[in-house]
Image 1 (cartoon, one colour):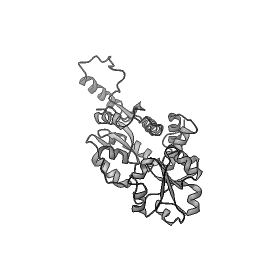
Image 2: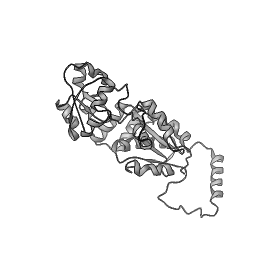
Image 3: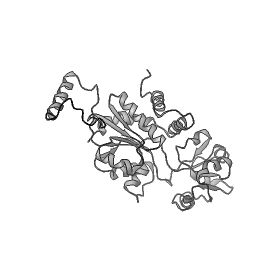
Image 4: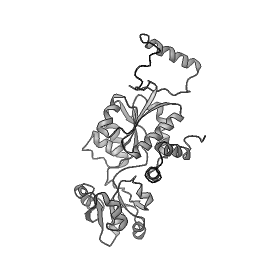
Amino acid sequence: MILTRKKGALGVVGLTAVAALALAGCSSADPLDSGDSSSASSDTIVIGSQAYYSNEIIAEIYAQALENGGFEVERQFNIGQRDAYIPSLESGEITLFPEYSGNLLQYFEPDTEARTSDDVYAALQEALPDNLTVLDQSSATDQDSYTVTGAFAEENNLVSIGDLADVTEPLTLGGPAELAERPYGPTGLQDVYGVSVDFTATGDTTVDDLIAGTVDMANVYTADPRISTDDLVTLEDPEGLFLASNVVPVVNADVADEIASVINAVSAALTPEGLVQLNVESTVDEMSSADIATQWLTDNGLIATS
């Protein structure tokens, strides 16, 4: 179990008492023996990330925010996917991890029928193991969406997916081949929003085909940096055709209260457009995750400028 203690929260007397208790609890050990240097100390927040640049940026934002708040932090980034890191979260080896609500819910409950952001968040809290919990979710998402070009949205007055039903010309949807059979594919569009489309499998060239006009709309992840760089518009999904997948911090339940104020402030400031911009800074501007995090935290008033 990883425990935390916020530095600066105890006076000299309190620190002395804590130190005495720590020595008493370890009286059989050599106080000069640091043990395994690869292990985090008991007052360290261990933050993990997926092997995904966008997830690493969020993890680094968490890390710098906590360090600014007086916490000791250890980074264990680029771990891999859920099968690799969930066991470490459950065991307490990792204390905190940036996750995506819908995808994480499906990991624990593959047959979930929750779709909207609030329903998914509520279901996730129930689905997690007892020793894990989630802090406030962000409005930022990284999930499936239907996206159009800015010009097409303006020409047809498009804001939400349902607005596509008012487009008089035939619509062609582009996306991976498997989209044809997905519940949010052409059948779902018709059933939920009354929108009829033809489907073209575009695979890895989906965004290129959208920009070229080969397709009118496309299945694009909401945090794709090209949404910003190529003037694309993600259509709102008020009926929950897609499983909402908001950025959400997963944390060891024993330390959640101690770090909640710091991490919840990050979640409150992280917007969908902001996450896209962070990804642009990584993929286009080629900034490091550390520099991106510092700039974002400073711009949002969460750390002071030096």
